[in-house]
Image 1: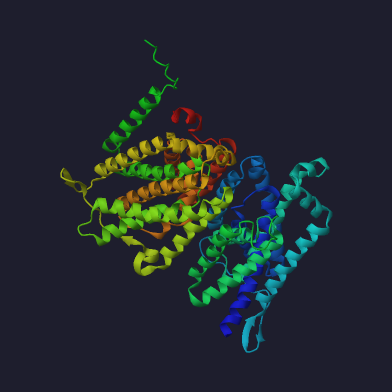
Image 2: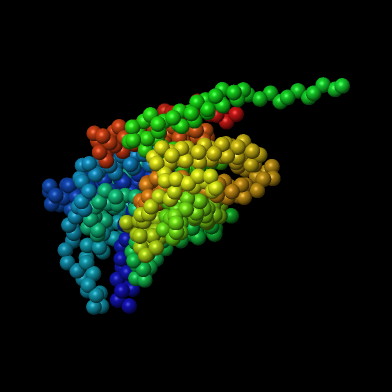
Length: 286
Length: 324
């Protein structure tokens, strides 16, 4: 029973972080048909930048901000140099190109920071007692942070002027262009936002398990899974799917080892693609 | 007397066969003149090239990008390992058989589910399936040896009733070359058969192929299975060469490299993947001399540049001639 409560909390917290990763990924996919294979590696790079800034300044929130900004700038550079020339080509070529980017980033991180695990110290000290169980505050704070960032993104997309530009471009690229929206600029901005969110989630996730240069692939795969389970390009769906998949994995980890618990999310993905390829959390298409 | 009906004009294939013979002859001579290191290197290029070629059936001819070929390759390796560890004395034929059965079984499984999906969804699902196999192999320590993998001895090269001898690097190279050349000719024949034509029409226009009345899913399933079998074959060869099977080769990185070979060499040419593998491995060899494991940084950049500026790959300009 205790374990179930703990795993539920773990699942919810991990789900919120994953939701943040996935919302960046799905935003990028929704607007430019780019399947960003390097998303997890941007997260990893963000976590490393965050860890370095934290090491120098000792301020976690500053580290979060700097990591997001640095990776956003990197995202802009990547989008302009690598993805912009590929617009109009088969979406599959973008998988290949971002896969190349992911290799480069991974090895760069290895070169820059070495193979050892970096710790990011917990931003919020202490634990709280739920019934008779101890649970660290920083995990809760992380989930709330992630929720706030996702909420901010949602509000921006819903009501912000540029958010409306982004949604217009998602719906109809040509029409948006005709209405005077600078579509190439929107693409770059969206990639920057997605990258920044990945970096921020990297810094948020850092205290959980440390930062290594191989963590990116794991996140890329999970983010793919929840984005497909939630419905490609659907923000709300991928958030729900993140929490759903993370909870399932957390419960599975009670029975089998965490390494094997990953298979649960693979199975969810396969079942979703077979029986409901448009996504679990979207209304049935007419 | 009626005149013979005029033969259908065919593009001249003589040039192709001359080129083919020259390359094969060069590859036969290669191990005799190369120093041991490069001898081994040449064999390895052939093995990786075979794996990449198997993937080309999907990427180049059917228009489906598989990010899961490591599963078939790895299962080929583990199948060979199973045969070589259980059968006494170790037999080459059994290793091939077990490897192909293991890879084929995995391919049936993946094909059944993954072919219902298209484009990136197919790519992601093959990736996920290969990771499922990876996790199983990695965690099932009692059977697969877990992280350490399995090591075994090399079987003897046996042609029943004719020949039986230990493999030397040179005979092993010839053995691999023979398997690769036969596989290549077989796959080439398949891609030019009516079946192969249907695959290519799926690549060009899937809805129209369906509208003509072809059962597209069935063709795709067979394509994935074929591809998986040849990938498994290359896995067996790799296991025989290195005398081990390890979970690293089931990991997604191998699948990624396979796709890189295809893109670099030229998709839809069957020969291109070999050129891509050679190009990649040579670059890796050259770069890792002074960059050690960071060779992937320049290599990744070269790969991206090639995607943008040379999407047809190194041999893409020969595509038409190679398919006549």
